[in-house]
Length: 277
Image 1 (cartoon, rainbow, N blue to C red):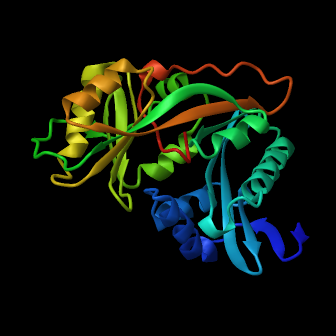
Image 2 (image 1 turned 60 degrees about the vertical axis):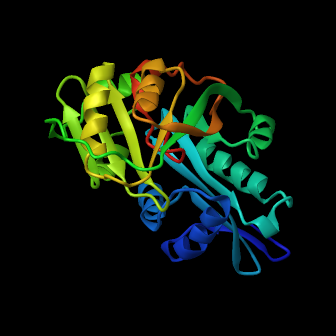
């Protein structure tokens, strides 16, 4: 789609440096590797809008089969805001998902983005909060097993099969307590990121949190929590995390015949990231 110097096209690896500038202007935590992950996971679902050859706006899609898709990295450079570029890319992404036949679509909305998403048919599902720790304490790591993914537990928590995404994220740090849960962490441009973490009980989550924090003494840490899981909030407070920002998880059906999508937020002790869910 091209109109008066405006071009909507696929986002490419060569765009990552320019996309990082958009991310930095928004103050987000993603790294170049995070952009690369999104492009590798859904190369036909990551979109760029350029103006006279300059990257002005981005939107990415991550598909979990045909059950669920997650929209993320909805960014526009400050000098191009107010021109409807985010809406154009969102409409482009929704058209792509309609062609894919995805049943449900979700995203985590900032205050700036939420009015647009409401106009596009999204509804509020739940609040989501970022908690931050200025410096991880020095902790002795408890025993934890090598990572073993439990697809049944994860589907119960998340609502869709996300093995492909989990296998990619496990390249960094991943630990598990067999039968009780798992946790992951990865580098960020501003802080170490704790998540995803899916557990059947608070004590399992505590053990896995300590295991990962013990590897990053003195480093800042971000942790994104669904407040419906009060046990996760209590853990964050116990370890000295402070609330940093609040978003809204939003959802819309991909079609009028979308079957119900069950999920259990009580099992989600940390999300995978605002771009993944």
